[in-house]
Amino acid sequence: MFYKKLSNNLARWGKKSQKLPTNNDVIKQNVLNSLRPTLEEVKIKQPFAWRWLMVAAVPALVILLMISYNKTMREIPIGYVENEFDTGLAVESSDRAVGGGFGVMATQKTGLSESASISEKIMGTVSDYVDSFSRHYYSQSPDITDTREYLKTTFGLDIKTRKVEKTYTRVKTIIRGYGGRIDNSSLSEKYARLSFVVPKSDYDSFVEEVQGMFPEKFIKLSENTSNLLPQKQHIEEQTEQTNKTLDELKQDRTDLVKNHEEKVASLQKEVNRLNGIIYSLMGQRKDIPTTDTIALQKINEQINYNLRLRNTQNESLNNENNQYQKNLNALDQRISAQENRLIELDKQDTNLLNNVETVDGTISIRWISLFEIVNLYIPVYKTLIILFVLIIIFYLFVGHKSKEIQLP
Image (cartoon, rainbow, N blue to C red; front, side, top):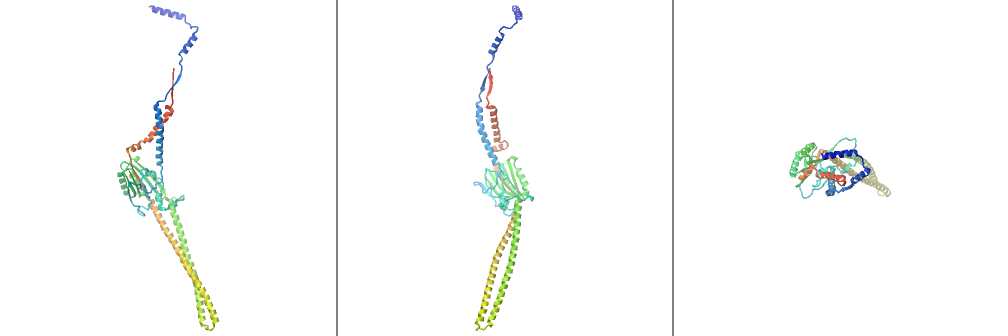
């Protein structure tokens, strides 16, 4: 009761005496000054683990990019021309058929190298079969008005498998089943290669069957098609030129024989005329008395003069015959050479047409590890490149910046 009355009394006193102290503003300012915090920037140091992660990420990224670059460069197609098999491998090869089967092929023996795939090389030049037609043919482009197509196809299959020998045997069986011819084949424990030809009519079916044996990621097809029209045009031009030259040579031979016969006839006529004169003079000499030395001397001089003329004509006739025979033999040799050239050009034309009707193929069979199988579906090096790039980006934009806070 006492406290209640005291409280009420104080409340009444406060209401009556409500007013600010005379130094209220000063007191207020002093109180606020004493309570205002002093702000200070405090930096949090970068965690030690981030620095080491950044140090590891940069060189690792460089190495992975180099690996990626080298792999890309190896995938650039290059000319597929190799001469010899590598040593240390079991090799079986069949002799190349010339002029039979599917035409004359000029496929070189191929080297066996596990570091280079067929699909990486087959897209280069087709110079291995062009050898049959002379390499100097192709210095100019074909006439654009000539729309003929003589398409020659070459292809390569790069197969990855865990069973190299079994796949090698099966592919050989398929090639022969399609009427193909194996030119070179090589087999080792983890690598095999086949060089062959198949008829063009069976090419699509052959490739479809071989591709169907393996998942898509385990087989790679590389194909090159080239129009042999320049070679065909060159053979036709050479044939036309050879026929023209042959006709000219035959005409030269005809003219040579005609001129020779006319010249020989003229020389022989002159020889016959001189012989007649000589025989007549000899007859006259018989009628002259032996005592008439002056007459005998004159007629002997005439006889000797005509004999010299006759000898000169006979010599000219012999020279003409000898020169004619030389010229005739030379023309006959040139004619024979042009006729042989026509035969060779005809063979080249036939070989080209036969060549177009075949497809040159090379199959590379490689053993693949389990890690490589996983890498086919999930490229490890690409994933690591992305991861390291993200680490570097995060470090540049977030990780290396010092965080600032304010403390009272």
